[in-house]
Image (cartoon, rainbow, N blue to C red; front, top):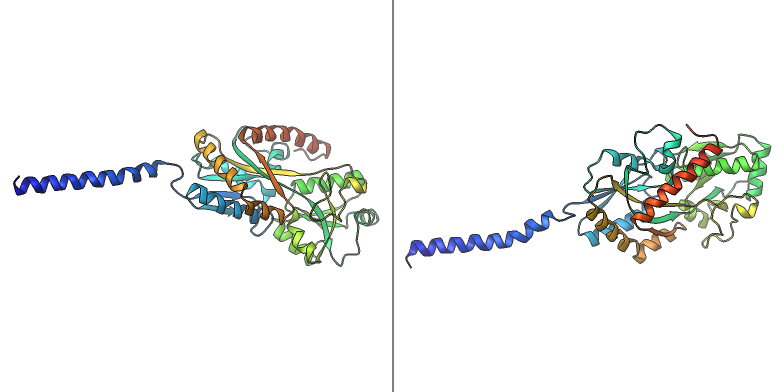
Length: 324
């Protein structure tokens, strides 16, 4: 072998080795995910939605091998992330949290998309619990006294929620309708805002998910009622609405969607990753801090839940006279 041949052979072997080394890297780059994933949530940072979602995102990032980033899009009762899905690429790199108000959108405002057909449902994650709180120094000490005060002072008893036409707003108006009272609704962008307002005595009461939990435990807020079928395990002293004579149970499951048209294989991969992430103890612990629990639904079940919920929400909206 002459020197020139050896040189060319050596070069060929080097190129072959480089190609073999690069091959897996190129294939890896073609796999999903190959870049960070975003989750859009419709509520402010630091609240009962945001805190558990950040734990879930950290868990999912370890499973997917890419960062999972939370982006807060508060306002409009939590519907903005679902709305944004209508204009984002169907590539699996952006998911949105869908709270209950999304399912009443077609009945409360004019929109050019349909939650039933224009969202691709990935996984049901958890369910909110709800309650009504007042400042610890409020003269109102029970739900019965709350209703009595409202009857004696029509339109003067104010309550805050995360926004107009949210589940909390509609439930409070349902309570008012059932008890014959008139309340003053003050909408906020999220529960971190509304809770600061009630603690600062800028609003007389707040209806919300248990972002109020730590403040109740600290003695800064008083919990008048919870809205589940049975009493809260964490706050057993607070009666349910049914126990105070109001025939109403309100819970609110939520989950994740991707834009319509996302590759089913990618959607399934996301489902599997987030199912593992939600089963980790730290996620369940983060939910428990806000008196919440996991509420798993696979993609098909979650889609059916959306269809069923839209039917029931239509009935409630029409009953309260709030249809567009």
